[in-house]
Amino acid sequence: MVNVVEVLRERGLLEATTSPLLETEAGTRQLTVYAGFDPTAESLQAGNLVAIMGLMHFQRCGHKVVALVGGATGMIGDPSGKTAERPLLDEETVLRNLAGIRKNLEHFLDFEHPTAPAVIVNNYDWFRQYPFIDFLRDVGRHFRMGAMLGKDSVRTRLDSESGMSFTEFSYQLLQAYDFLHLYDQMGCCVQLGGSDQWGNITAGTDLVRKLRGQEVFGITIPLVCDRTGQKFGKSAGNAVYLSPAKTSVYDFYQFFLRVDDADVIRLLKVFTLLPLEEIEAYAAELATAPEKRSGQRRLAEEITRRVHGEEGLVRAQRSAAVLFGEAMDGLDADCLLEVFAQVPSCTLARAAVVEQPVVQVATAAGLCKSRSEARRLIQNGGCYVNNCRVSDVDAVVAADALIDGRLIVLRSGRKRYQLVRVA
Image (cartoon, rainbow, N blue to C red; front, side, top):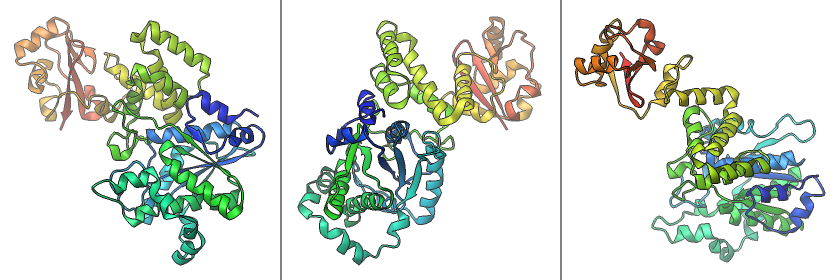
């Protein structure tokens, strides 16, 4: 079988493993691997894609994969990489978020695989029935305060102004028990997570070794950061969500289209399944013709297609083309509002737009300072309504020009847009 550790290494998805034996095991037998996801929102986001791709490679190489949604741990909040305690979630919110996360994962993992279908579990299902005293006696007594206090995530928080609550401090016990439970119930022997999860992962491998006398493995993958060096995450305020209800398909596509030249080849390896030879061809083109941005376009296409389907990709590409003057046919008002979210806009009454001269509407909307300026703009061929050139100074805005009956887009020249909301 193809060795998944080698695959992850080649694609820049391998940070560290708890034992070199994992690579041997991964090449000789089927393993069961799990990764955890916090249900802090109804959608996963770009930062989670690295772990998802890791699970995807494990499954493609013939291993069983488990996605653990932390219904219990999500109510506490992982302190790793955080400077303040997370808001506590209630059970209803967690269950709602779990349903959304399942939809995200279905675009990457095969839950209908004939021999090794992906599985999604919720750790609230086993923690809600575990009495606190029993948990302390069975699990807590195997942890030593010195080791727990020495973990990077704990030291950082203890040194911060906000400190750390006992609730957060207990997080690593819960995550460690997750590994033990999945080992007992599903034969899970590998936990995968971001490099900031090393302390939590090793807590789990230690617990399984102490209580079951078996060696299990941890594997970490590099964190993907934005251009400022911050991890893509909800708490950092720069989240790009996988659900179109939280991040539009257009904005999702644009986010990956805008990645820096210095990052694009690495992200093609991490976020796509393109053969490495093909990615190297993009690297060669980047060196000779960076202005073409072919790697960025391919990255945006591949990941948008994976997350939003072919229809979503086409919609995002057509929306982007609108900014370069292409026709708006087939795009609805909500989509255009996303595309033109950053351009000047105004609201005019329907009576001030429909069947009114374009000269008058352009002036009222602020595209032109005066009617005479609007006439000159039309005469010079520089006035557009919904990217259609206006050639007659006496032209009026027809009722069917309103997109969904509530929007028109005016343009002066090549790039100066004015959005008109029709009340």
